[in-house]
Image (tube, rainbow, N blue to C red; front, side, top):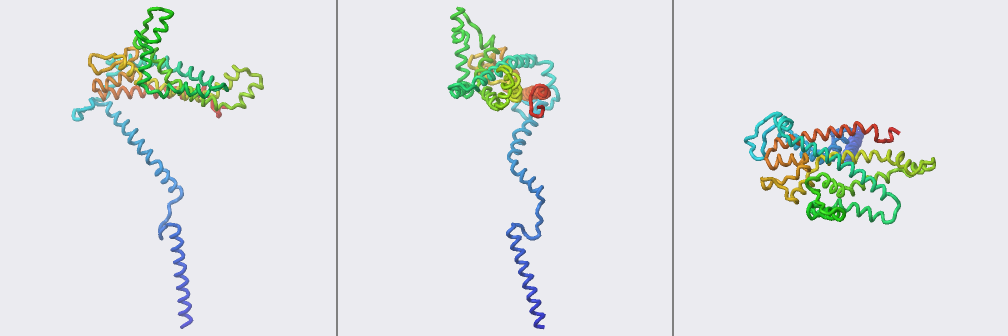
Length: 344
């Protein structure tokens, strides 16, 4: 009996020790007894969504919700103030834009003219400037900084500077031209407003375009240039057959950004109107001259001057559709002229 009792006690003690060791092991692993861990795939997924949660919240609250609200507003007669009088009007705002509002077509044509005048000038000059400053010349760091400075000048101060230069009566540009042609009084801010605005926009954006093109030029492999020169290619041939193809992705990026930015242009013509004092009979309704009456100017007047929030937002959606369509066309046609390594 004593032997059996001793054997039972030893077995019980051993089992208790094993249980204690098991509890300690589980405690070290940080899991309670009976808890079945999630599969590794699920844990990775949960951590992924946990870390992108702030971005998702910003996307929903600052993009999806405002866009959805704006789309719904475009189908109403909302005036920005009286929510009690809001009524659903269906497609009336869009139909009115196509059939009755003549300024919609005029402002769109002026925006197309502005894009056709400004975008090529800015891209070509920025690219030429980047080519020059990519050479191993003395003082190129100074010139890179000097050409980039206009991009960081406050916009209001810059517009006042150009108002002094382009003014019809006391402008420095007309005074300079008057040295060769006395009596010159060209209306750079009214009659030739698109040309004057193009000069201002190109001058202020030259630094950014130069910086982007310069980064692309510095990414062109030197070994390809050297191989082309060894094969007998001259400077022009190297530029046309090596540099340009390798720069097409950068050119495409700048082109798409420029098209989108051109259709969004609002601040410069509005500031020119405010500085130049071109106003309507409404007093506070500052309107640029007709050559500078771009699409965003018309949208701004409808929303803030006439309190037609529903109609103005409908115009914004039409502008968005046009810009999206142009962007899709650029992406579809890019396969014919944009060089990628996959194409070889």
